[in-house]
Every structure is written in structure tokens, then in C-alpha cells.
Image (tube, rainbow, N blue to C red):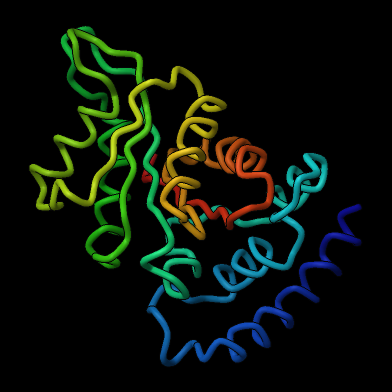
Length: 212
């Protein structure tokens, strides 16, 4: 299986260079975050098998990606149609955020600043002291310079599966073409699988990991 996967990935690297050339991007002219890794991930997200309704293929394809903090190719190809979704994590009882959630927000802020046309969704319910995760994240982003008009709150979800289900409806309603899921390194792969299952092949899904 390892040998087969390496062979497949070598083919994907070659295909990614062709795909990038086809859309007018090159390592010299595209975003500074375009690397062989992000190219491979980009191809997997599009023609590599991740955009499907078959869960088994989604799991295999997502597992073949290399998780990274770099901006995914989706945001370079379509920064307006691609939404940035940052996933919540449990708040303290007084409604303040844990360091892990702040790390996710810092990763989302980097993307928001780099791609100012990309809409943002904060996803997470589980209110503490009357504050949902989505609202706490929105307030942090606004306090750090993001225009509130860019941000939509999804404040009902209580699990990663619900993050994906409820957010996918928002994405569908606004005609989004792609989504970049931002979460912690130990959570992104599972979140990407849940989002890919939820969108059922209707849009592209990529992921970005936070510092922790």
C-alpha cells in the first residue's frame, strides 16, 4: 500500500504542474505559498478523488494530503468563491477562549489578510456565559482588523460533523465554490473528511492547520 501510494503521489505531482500551467499559475508568479506540497494537495482537492460522494474515497484521498500551514491553492484560483471557515473549540466557563482557539484564529487571520475578498465563517455553538464559540471568534477577528461584514456566524453546532453540516448549508445558499477549513493539526484531517462528506462533491474543500 505504501509503494502504491508513493507511486500515485509521484503521478499527482506531475499532474499538479500541468494543472497549474493550465490555469496560468507558476511557482514564480503565483502566491508565495505555492509549493510542490500545496500543488499536490490542490490536485487532490479537485481532480484527485477528494471531490466525491463516496466516503471511502474521501477518507483515502484526504489521508494522502500533507497537512500544512500554507495557503491552499483554492484561494489563489478563486479567492472570492472560496470561503474561509474557522472551527471553534470549547470556551472557558466565562466565555473566554483557550489558547488553542486563538491559534486557529491567528491562522484564519493570516488567510483573511492575504485574501481580503474571501468570506469568513466562524463555526461553533456550545455557549458559555451566553457567548457561542462563533461569536467569540467573530469578536476576536473584528478586534484584529477584519471587517465584520465579511464574517458569518454559524453558532448552532456542537460537534465537527455539525460544523460541516450547518456550514455547508450556508455555503450552498451563497453559491460558494470552495471552502478552506482552519483548525488544529490534530483535527484538520477529520474536519476535512466531515466537510467533504457534507458538501457531497458540490464544492472543493481544503484545509489549513494552526500552530497547535
